[in-house]
Image (cartoon, rainbow, N blue to C red; front, side, top):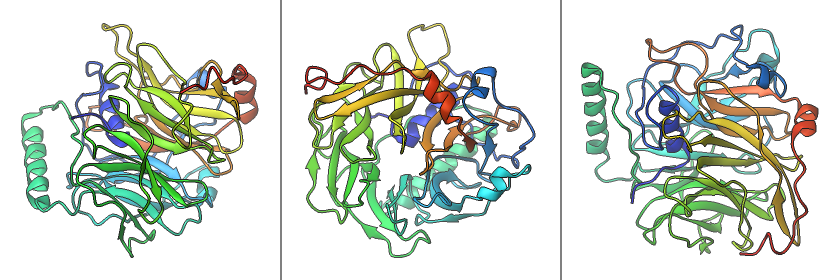
Length: 401
């Protein structure tokens, strides 16, 4: 079965934002990027209502994205393709708060955490910041052939100018690991045959959410932080993925295409898998949900796919929610971005004042448009609070499985 995973979805969508026909599958550009230019305005009138001028925080990578803050807010983890290499690697980078607030932001030097072979994706800090969780296929016995094939294809595409339609297969050698942020003390958590990735810790660090196709269909699982006590939480036909615990650990937000293939929607369920509630619906693709740490808000990436003649534009959306023992409910979505490039994979800082996301903004790459990089901005929390709609009160009917 072939579907799209958290970062892999962004690769496809960012390419689509450059004018490729709509859909989850589209072509990739792979060009080296220049240093960030903080003085170039990138916000629209809509965006000025909700956040300050975005600042790019990654450089020197062919592309970079899916970034998350460390619990102390002074580091970020992300995945990026370094020049001359075929696949993503996992990096940790100091987040220079002083540089971000200054007139001339300065990216800091990234440090590689993953082993450097095979595919990697989906990094996440432990709650105490001492470990980094990520998925890797470096144990693939044919990893050298896999990499050589990818390099040969990239070289041929560069020679011919081909913009290849990109497809990500769930790598059966992808497993979940933890390591110290310097890459040492690598520990393997999953050993089952099949794809295991899209992982994140619970707020108390005792559990790990992840996605696996070990039963033939990508579903959401939870395990103890040492890899034991694996339990399956979803078992619907179709893809369920990208799960994150709510700040209190009571709920899980995720994406699913169980209603219509490839038309991802945001759902929320209780931490035990019960009480599933759809947050989005309709002919669109909605994914990468993320909880605000201090406000009852969910943020995600979404685009309208209802018009087959129009190119979908992926933007950031947010909704206010209410949750209690009776159930979960969310209000109408609020659009936060409308840039002509893609804005995807949003993540809040631990104090909720900053937004880190993956975007194709800024300078171009050889005339083919901006590549995906990480950007950060300071949020206007009162403005968002004033604009986001209040949800209806939860009820058992809304929260029924």
